[in-house]
Image 1: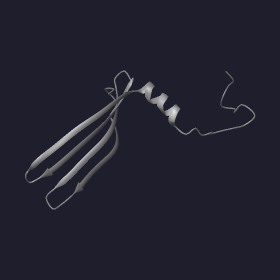
Image 2 (image 1 turned 30 degrees about the vertical axis):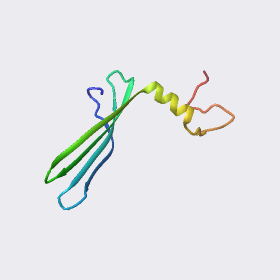
Image 3 (image 1 turned 90 degrees about the vertical axis):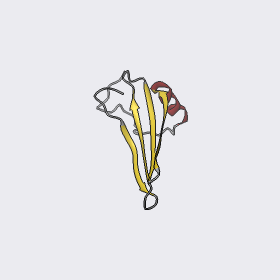
Image 4 (image 1 turned 180 degrees about the horizontal axis):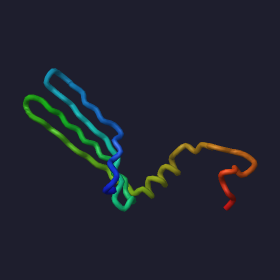
Amino acid sequence: MPRNTRPLVLEQRQVKRTHAHLHCSETSLHLSDDERELTLRRYIEVSSPEGMQWVERSHRVPVAALMRWIIAHGEEQAVEQGNEMPAHRSAV
């Protein structure tokens, strides 16, 4: 993760299952220092009077592979369309 960038928290939950049981979870994305890998992390914690249990899982993927997957599997949509080049773009 870049030193001056915090992870992107996708989901954070705290659920009181019963009077004494608490279930917490957090899902976040982290970018590596060299910006080549993206890591999805999921942390789960369950607290009760008997104690606490937790687990953290992570899945890492190269950013280039993720972009190729999105292009191959994503739904393509035309954002703009026309017969002339938009004023804010120049011909290559």
